[in-house]
Image 1: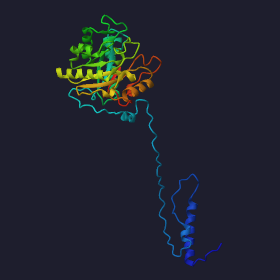
Image 2 (image 1 turned 90 degrees about the horizontal axis):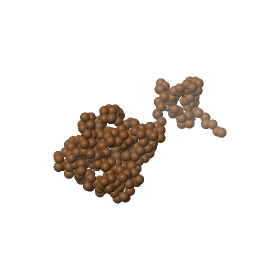
Image 3 (image 1 turned 45 degrees about the horizontal axis):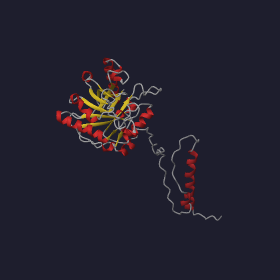
Image 4 (image 1 turned 135 degrees about the horizontal axis):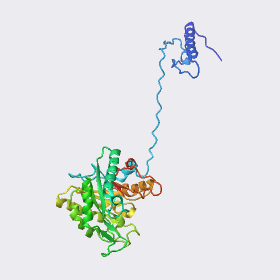
Length: 361
């Protein structure tokens, strides 16, 4: 290896460089100490340069660290809770502008469902009137606490036409509640500042002939309607309870058209219509259901079972086929009979879209 002879000035520069390199090495200390940033010198760049310039190093500064960033892990949603799935499905729905007095979407309805003539059909008839209203008030408070920004409207959801296993005198496999019972429950609702829903299980009767029977009560501004495809079996001819029934969009459109004319006839605020659904064929051609500003449609997830099954049903039969608003039914007994917990308001509110109608049976 051949060495180049250096001039005196170059030798002096080299000496200074060696000193500067050695000093930080002496200050390094033990491996656990926090190191300082020393001057960065390229020895090869000055070793052959006659006129190298040496700059006095600045005072050591605290070492600066650039935090490492990593991509956020993808959020794992349970069935019915994924906002991207809801958006791809068509939520939020482009609804007609809300008319004065409309309940949705400004409020959330929390209802007790059943019939005062039966302790087995739901909370509305399971408990004595005063206890029932007290329990409903407690549920309303729980929902208000879970979502303080959304006012809660209590309601009683009366099964006013009950599907039957026997054909009865009319041969229609349904029983119409006496007007006195309907009026009694309407009085209970008003006592609790609650809405009343008239729920119809048609059996073998056409909704087109049965619905007008209730104009006398539906003409009240605080009375709304529910229809139950499960017990609409006129097409199949099967007995209620042996097969799950169905409604087509044409049936729903008849009902909304009837309610629309009722609102106009009596100068009423918009009616709420709940449509129970927990199967694929429970409502056929759902995307053909027409929307009117006079009627607010809630597709109510009506299935019972473990929480995962209820979420699956909500996703597949309510979220996947948007209509207008969504509902969710909670069963005090059927949801919990296999040891599963009843879903809490906070858990239900994780669903997307969030249900604006909640029903307890």
